[in-house]
Length: 283
View 1 (cartoon, rainbow, N blue to C red):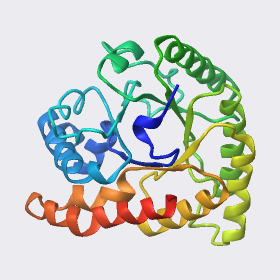
View 2 (view 1 turned 180 degrees about the vertical axis):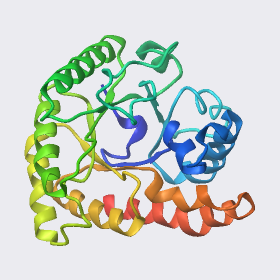
View 3 (view 1 turned 90 degrees about the horizontal axis):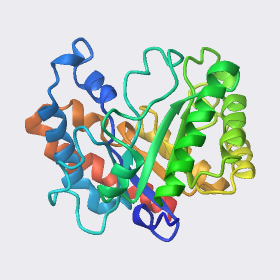
């Protein structure tokens, strides 16, 4: 199954805007429930309308942006991924295995016109019980995607990591386990905690370990950090064989937090140049 709808010549420069609970937390950390569905849709509409033309694809979700932004806001010729997972796991990732959003399905994602489905699973290979459950979920959804005929972007994401030095081992083992399932694309965190390990040679070696284990394309998520550090991480990852980026808050975080009257200017003057710079790095 082809990923051409969200890539350009096999290179990915994807705008991630499929945030839901995390978007509410960014907008109103003291009272996330005060952020309305219309507020989130309007914000996504502004970002996608201004930026999607400079991306190879966009990551959307079925609560606030599918089908809302398929009214011409998403430019013709720019494909999108459709998030599958329900929300509510971030506060207690081991409470239950990941489930598909109620009323949604792989078939519904395909019927919406998505170029790919996306599944995020919170995952720690050193937590055997929960890890096995999450692996089963991922395997079942991957099989369903193959049956329906839509590629799957699989995003296994670690959580609750108190020791930054453990990150490399966890990410590497996670990649090894999920690559063995043969998903169409892996969306991964940077394997090194950049703030604690400034040595770029260590970055390069860690990224090479991922590339050695991935026989499918892999992309780098931004994880909510600052743009400059993320840009440097993308450089290291791409040099090691990464196929591109799927970036969210590192790109548009300042625009989301700005007063609405300033948002369009920040998107044009700050966010769009960042996206263009990352596209240049990816090639």
